[in-house]
Length: 121
Image 1 (cartoon, helix red, strand yellow):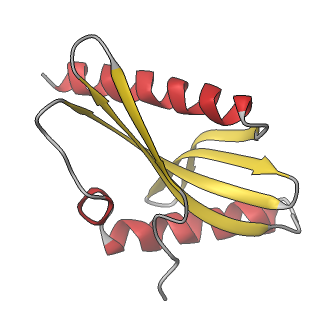
Image 2 (image 1 turned 90 degrees about the horizontal axis):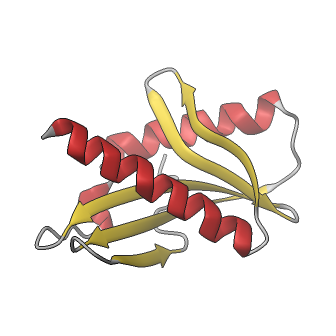
């Protein structure tokens, strides 16, 4: 069902946020919306701001990062993050990460892909 997928997504976002905070990142925003975009997590460590896309899947349904995030979605994410940085006048380097979770009914398997995609123009 849709709600089950939604619950899985929300749980994955919580796991990703805790994981990043344990690595020393400061959580700046969750589900940041701008125009048609929504950025799952925006975190910062020193002068690096990271926009994080979180994807959750149940076992047997594996997507590559390229399949998980379309070029159109990347463009929207880039616009949203640009807006976030400019509206807060932050002097930061920006990176886009993807954190995927596969849930097999008992365990969560996490994969953190740094610089999963680049802001193509």
